[in-house]
Image 1 (cartoon, helix red, strand yellow):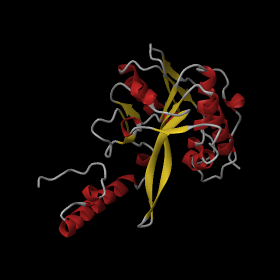
Image 2 (cartoon, helix red, strand yellow; image 1 turned 45 degrees about the vertical axis):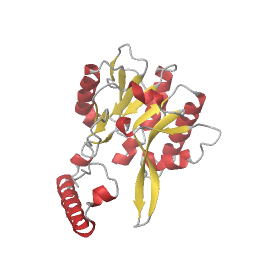
Image 3 (cartoon, helix red, strand yellow; image 1 turned 180 degrees about the vertical axis):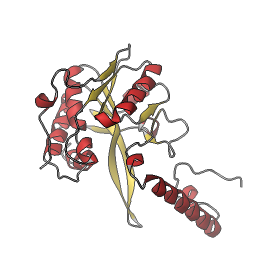
Image 4 (cartoon, helix red, strand yellow; image 1 turned 120 degrees about the vertical axis):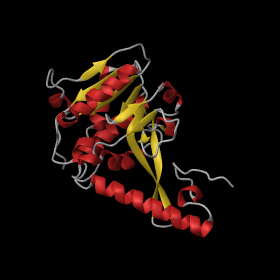
Length: 255
């Protein structure tokens, strides 16, 4: 059972300061931060202010003893925001996202809610779709509320090593006739900075991985492996691995 608390118990007045700012936007960007992420939340707020985007970043306590426990606070924050802004579309973003321009185009995404679903390799042949919620659009609909309630309930009964997105797979499988889930365009999906398309409006630069001692070593090893794989494929096929399989960041070579 997850170490968690009810919304009413946690959402006490003046427990810790939220970060918020209002402009004339038709939507509100929301997010949350635990005390160790407060500098990132402050920087994100300044980024949103530059683009005159209304936002509310909720100050939250640390729950449990793992990063996974913190991610499972996402649906609780969404439920709080639905109470605070019942008539407005909400755009959830992780606080290590960066906005580069006008994000209002995200509102054209279909569904009661919309998120990115990315392809994940399962062995050498099979692939699967995996939801990611670093950016999530939530509309003021009954379907969206049903989704949040189901996700929050799932997180409260999740295993210790389950992230919010692991729980989300079960929730999405229960969507028929309850809520419609759309997909976000890559430009608004918060793709990692080193993989994001050049026209990306919302990008992500993970601070979670950088807090791990092996982060720099892992990133270096990934770059080394990717360069070697591209070189091998170019020798064998005339194209790099990234070009052959349409990976972001691939560069076309003159013929």
